[in-house]
Amino acid sequence: MGFQQGLSGLNAAAKSLDVIGNNVANSGTVGFKQSQAQFADVYASSLTGAGGSSIGIGTKLATVAQQFTQGNITATNNPLDIAINGGGFFRMDTNGEITYQRNGQFQLDRLGFIVSASGAKLTGYTANAAGVLSTGAPAPISINTADIVPNVTGEVNAVLNLDSSVGVLPAAGFNMNDPTTFHNSTSVSIYDSLGNQHTLQTYYVKTAAGQWNVYASTDGGPTSLVGTLNFGSDGLLTTPMPLTTSVAVTTGAASPFSVDIDYTGTTQFGAAFSVNTLNQDGYSSGRLAGYNIGADGIILGRYTNGQSAVLGQVVLASFSNPNGLQPIGDNQWAETSTSGAPLVGVPDSGSLGVLQSSAVEDSNVDLTAELVNLITAQRVYQANAQTIKAQDAVLQTLVNLR
Image 1: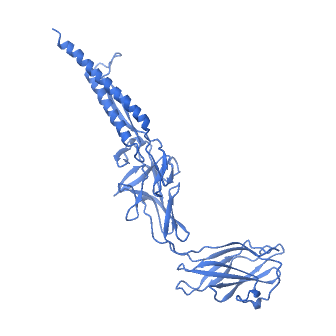
Image 2 (image 1 turned 60 degrees about the vertical axis):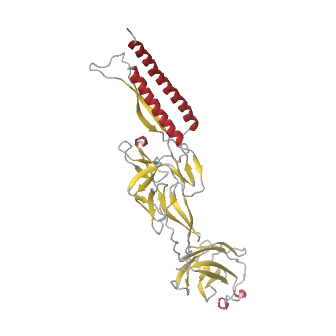
Image 3 (image 1 turned 90 degrees about the horizontal axis):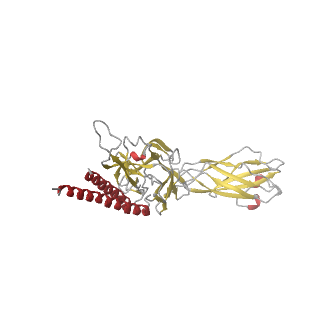
């Protein structure tokens, strides 16, 4: 029986060396999770049951368990490199076959899909042209590189202070080309439905105590009276907002279009004229200049017109028993009955970790510990070989009896 024990010990030591060697070989593989060979003793059974003095007949490999501990995170220069800090796996789609991985080294293919080195597509929630996510079933994520459509200006927000100490001017004498006929003016860029930029110039004329007429002109064209700003004795605005002006353009865009001018917060104090806020909600078309992935998996595109839009969201999957996943190579695992069904959700929800863009998760192999384990496994192999050698010597003694 000693030969069987020694042989099982040699097999076990060889399996341990194989596992350690695989760990060492993948110490530089992004997203790799080290494995550990776990063994169990073996006893022979008898018809009458085992006695208290039973001697085991060796050992066997019980399982090779992967250790899903967090690896170090290393920064990279690729915005599509993604590291998971915490639990979860990337959900990948290869022609309909769903797999899972921790390796976050991604790039774009020729169709704009985010793919791994093996060609598997990263899945998540896709977004429509308006940036609204479709949070149903996860699907392969593609980066839409189309230009963002222009947005016509609908509102201008203006917060001013008009000097209460200036004198009154006659309303009938206003002329935008004569600075003596108005007190102050401002200008802001607005956009038509085709994204063409125009300049909206507004003029302010004090016609009575606490009363200012507002005139508007687009691109130096004819002026029109937009409305009147009235202020109370405390210098605060009392006119209901907003005022509305009509803008006519000749660029082929929709014309005329209305622009609301909201002066909420504007004051009339005894101080010099000042512009505290002046902005509008329109913009021209823009090309995709770049994108980044947030901790919550949102892919946000940046455009040349200064706008941003949601392009999609990466999802993660977790399992009740990650050790039940089946390694299939290419840094991927497959679901099994032992692992349980995947629980899919957005990052930083439940037990799922957060994402870090322009970074990858290193292998969690402790190379120093593995080299020490390698020495130990080698000694175990040698010791089991000595067991066989000793049993052979005893058997040879028996054979030589006369």
